[in-house]
Image (cartoon, rainbow, N blue to C red; front, side, top):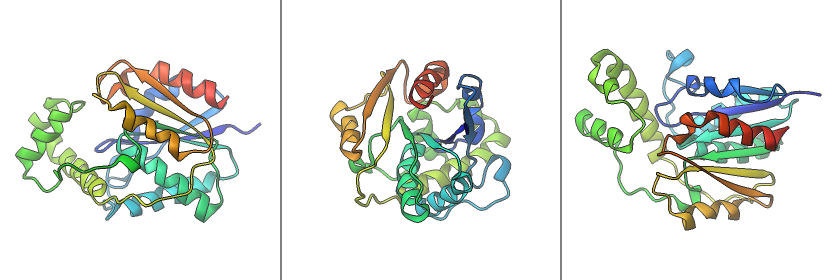
Length: 230
């Protein structure tokens, strides 16, 4: 029996390292593969993506190399929308149908409404906005060397998200799971619109925490993943 490949996509400013702890808790029959986006981590020397579509195409080309194995995908925040578009391109371009999708920390793209573009703000105002979202330690911005490395990454990711335009797709044909934090201030009506995007089962899981609940709840997240995949 082949292992299930679980690909994990990061939030804005995040890297593959964000999912390292999750690997300790998933079932031995699941091969957890955190994907590194261009311009950071092990791909630091590569240019940033020019658009959301470029990122999706790159992700699909990586996942398609594993199409001889069962595939599942997880994404948090920005990563959730990357998962959504990746699913549709995998199916259309590569005839790959994932077993299961895990959407964490975001509304469905049908509910996307950009209240404010922040990627073009000056550094100080941009940093204030990012800190206001929570999940990014202030110490990162207080350390000049770390800040100089981190700021271009997260700014590029926000530019990418701000360029995203949802286009209607056929409904997904796999089970989906939705993760959210009880302190995120989630609008339940909007969140539940995920159910409209798949023909198959859609389940919601609430966790204790703010927008970055995922990284304090790895053990619980892994239990849900294991129960759905193995």
